[in-house]
Image (cartoon, rainbow over all chains, first blue to last red; front, side, top):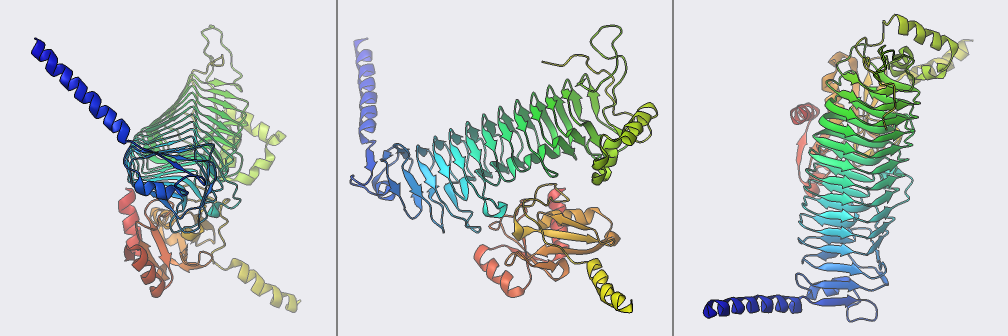
Length: 417
Length: 145
């Protein structure tokens, strides 16, 4: 018994010794004007895996910092890293790197190398946390990376021309990336995902970007929730993808002829649930979409709440609130293969005699005029004219051009809370 | 009177000329994918027999759109020169480069060049393979279906 205990003790002591020695070998480095290392790259040469480099306040103007070891870089009161013209400011080439509390500034335009303030190249398990990025071409650019976290960063730029502006957070061929609690404004696209899988975008605030607040392409099995996308040049675009979940986001004030709260193009098997669409030119625009479940959303004060193009089918619109939109639904087709049921329509003028909360008369959300404007946009000038109202009423009584089956047979009398 | 006709006629003719018009980045939208066009290096246009001009954000969008409509509706197709984005080239006189290192807006990485020397130099730097318009259409069709 005693012997076993002794062996156990020996093992535990050994374990402690190993732990302590590794703790001792993990070194700390200080970088700054008054320290041994005045440049981050000098400290990186001597650092080993799991070491920590503290960057003291100051201005660092270095030629491309390449991180090839699993170190932790921590900035004290946001030391400034000034970018350059030909390369990215910092490139991570090792797994397990943490970058925290740095301020990246002025990385310049370079189209061929897609200059970025911070670039992740083929890495895993990296954390990009609580940094600031101002006036960079691209902010964070991750290529062929996986299992990384990008959170609590503030990213802003103030370019006026789209072609001279890169994206705030740009992911290309990545997997399992978590993007959360970032604030992004003034870039071309706030967040851009191309060929990305199983990633999440949560609690971000993306506004005043020149093109899209969020731009998804060829990225399946991703989800985004609780984000706010406001006042972006063209709203949010989700394209050529399947299995996307979009829940509890806010899409606000995206105005313009080519601006959409949410542009869905060639999307299938996806969920759009509990989102708010407020004051957009078009709340949701669907083209070539199928099997999308759109439920529990609020469409408030939009030009068009939903624009459903002819080639979209088997989509399900349920229990949404349509309040005060100029047009609730618009389409360019006289046929319909989508289902609308149990929605609340503020324009609904029917009655509920049996008091079951469901209107007794079906609701036709497509007005004749919305079909005309879909085919010929300049006719919009006639909106609210007497003649158009007359046309709408006539069409309502004898539907001829509006899709007969695009009706809500069970409109809700009460707004959903 | 004859003088006016003489002066006006060429003007009217000129206004009907089927040539591409400049793409306004940040405001024009792609006819195929509906995205706002943002990169002048990869722009493209299609002019129909009736003179209507459709704009595209990438060469792959033009290719996809052109195979989807009837061939007789198309008057001409134009792409912007990668090396001089302000110049359009007719697709029939264009050499296309597919290179993973020259990322285009829609992910198929096709860029356009007007002359042999330019494309050779770019290919040397970035790698890839050279295609003609017909091959581009086949490539896009196979990738996107």
